[in-house]
Length: 127
Image (tube, rainbow, N blue to C red; front, side):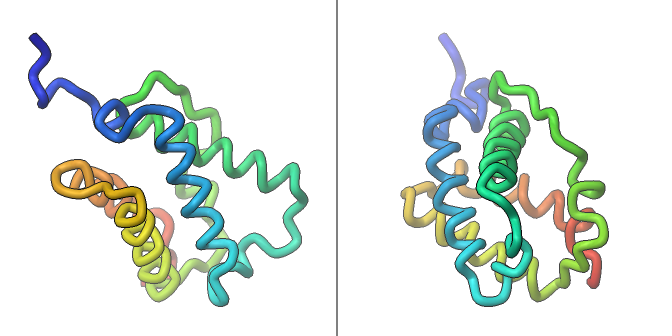
């Protein structure tokens, strides 16, 4: 018998397809945000597809899935973007709204928030 504590967040969220759906919604919200959309301005479709795939892979890996993230570490990937604490707050609002829209609550939501809050200090530069 597998204990609930042994089931990864990746599995609890529904696996690869569910995380990919989350990423699609999140990136759409971020790219269309009047303040954050600037970070994607000028990117080609190929670049946007690559970024989407890297985001899916990253979230799958850090949630305990059988996916290997091959991108740069979060500090290197966001270095020089001058992401402010305000930008981070807007990102978190979109992140939480996506969790709500996909009906992710309770421990699963808490675990998702713990993961994303754990990378704030390497992404938000102007704190």
